[in-house]
Image (cartoon, rainbow, N blue to C red):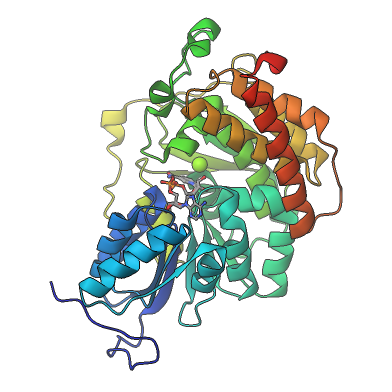
Length: 413
Ligand code: NAD
Ligand code: MG
């Protein structure tokens, strides 16, 4: 297929006037790829203006060929150089940039109205905050930016009139179950938010079995196909813990207003309980294209490519309480959420290091929680939040967690 050559400064080919400019931060990941699948169903509605990746040159190259953005950013400098060489060789004029400044340039592209924030981890912080400050519609998948910087992120969104629409399936479900324009939960008669949780691949495993779990077993999520880091988080239930913190910020709720219930079928994506005893739920097949399409089109409903549910085939829905003995990460996250300040950032950073070490075979599965608990008790908490403070505490937590990991969890087991 011939590639349109769009040189910086040169006139762009005519675009459909109603097409909304879309930046996808983390386009090579699971959420990014699903976003492009939804976008491909709607030619003329969205115009992809920037795509970003970390090191996956081949995938970003193919995406550039298919969607012809103005800009492609790679975190890794050498990957960026290789991408640029390949694009030039193919006659493409897509501009390539690198590093955090490159990601931020993509996030702030003036031709974008919508930014999908789907970088995994703390690396997504600066570009996501940039998009918020630029007043964009931000489709927020990067939960870490809310966990680390939630208060600031929501305050800045209000200040710069940015719209934050949740992509995480649970929060997207809650958003769908709340009246449009909800600002204060209490004034809408909301009693509590109930986040559902599949329970992960080890829901029925005994503690000794969980202790011997391998990275591949932890990544074999029963219902969702996701990146490896978030898959491990689902297995430890830390993902749900991060989601409790995320929900508190997004919906301005206290931790006491957010509960978690295990629902192994992953069909009820979350619920809102109202003062009169009503519970509203959002249901659907476990496929991220549904929340992505919901947020891309909002307030309109657009096709996602996902079929409706066959309720008779599903037959039954089960619900159970989470087990805090086998899955201590959930309680650690509630603790950090209630403590506030930099505590959630420390929790998140310690978790990232511990999960990385587990995936690399350096520590066992149950050591993940021990590392986090130990880091939380040794790193102090600062109450006032700024990007600088949060990054400073993030770095302290990482150093501490790395040290624990280097001792193969001996000091924490
Ligand atoms: P993934 O690992 O599949 O993709 C991550 C993306 O981020 C890739 O494009 C990768 O290139 C990029 N990236 C990774 N490290 C980077 C770095 N240091 N600098 C710049 N870019 C980097 O992850 P995912 O499953 O798509 O998840 C993305 C985000 O969405 C995460 O925050 C995750 O918690 C959240 N989320 C994902 C799902 C899901 O179903 N996949 C559901 C809810 C929320
Ligand atoms: Mg989720």
